Amino acid sequence: MKKSIKDKTIILTGATGGIGKATAHALAKEGAVLILISRSPDKLGQLAEELKGGYGIKTLICPMDIRDEMSCERAVGAVIEQYGKVDILINNAGIGLFKSIEDTSKEEIEKVIQTNLLGPLYLCRAAIPFMKQQGYGHILNISSVAGRRAFPQLTAYCASKYGLIGLSDSLRAEMLKAGIPIRVTVINPPAVDTGFFDQAGYTTYREGHPLVRLIPPEIIAEAIVKAIQKPGTWEITLTFRAKILNFLNKLSPRLIEYLNRKAGQAVKKKKSS
Image (cartoon, rainbow, N blue to C red):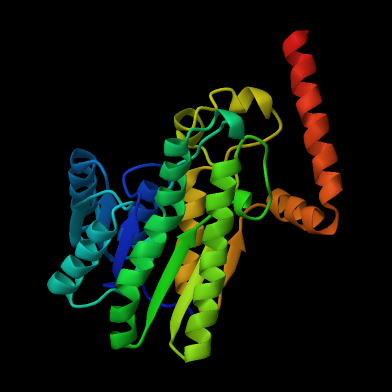
C-alpha cells in the first residue's frame, strides 16, 4: 500500500537545480508542503512561484548554505514554528570535483566534504529530535554510485558519498536499536543529465563516455517519490548497468580496475588519433 505524500511537510535541499528541481515538481504534484533550501534566493523565489502556480501547494523558502551548522538548525526551527512538524528530510544538495588528489586544494576538499556529508549530518541532527517527538519521520540521503564504487579523480567526492552512505546506515541502525520509527533511505543515482559535470570541472565527460546514457533528473525524482511511498526501502541504486557494475565491484574489484584502465587507454588512443 502506497503512503500518501499529500500535506506532508518535506525539507528539500539543493532544490533549485537538476535532481532537486525535478524532485520539487514531483512532490508538489503529490500535494506536499515543501521547504525549499538552496543558496540562491532568486532561484528559490522563482521555483516557489512555479510550484504555487502549477500545483497550488504551500512552500517555504530558506536561502542558506547547508555547510553552516547554525543555519541548518535555524531552518529546521523555522519549519517547526510555521508547520509544527517535519515529516520528511531529503538531503539532496551536493557538489562534485574532478581533480587528481595532488591538484586538489585543502579548501576544495573541505567544500566537498562539508556540502556532501557534513551538511546532511547537521540537518539530520537538527530534525531528528522533532521527528522523535512526533513519533515518526523519514530521511532520504541522495548519495551516488560513487558512494559504492570508486572512480579516478573523484577522491574527495567519493569520500563524501561513501561517508553519506555510512552515515545513513549508522543512523538507521541507531533508530532501529532505539525502537524509533524514523526511516532512513539512500538513493544512489548514476550519471544524471544536469550541469553537474561542467560545474565539477569535467567538461569532457560525454566525450570520454560515449556509451553512457545520462539519465534525466526526472527519473531520480520518480525514484525518490516511490521510496517515500514504499515503507521498508533502505537503499535504491538506479539503472541495471549500475547495479551490475556494483555487483562486479563487490565480486572482483580487480575486474573493475581492469575495465577502468581499458576505458582510460581507449580515451587516450582516441585523443591521439
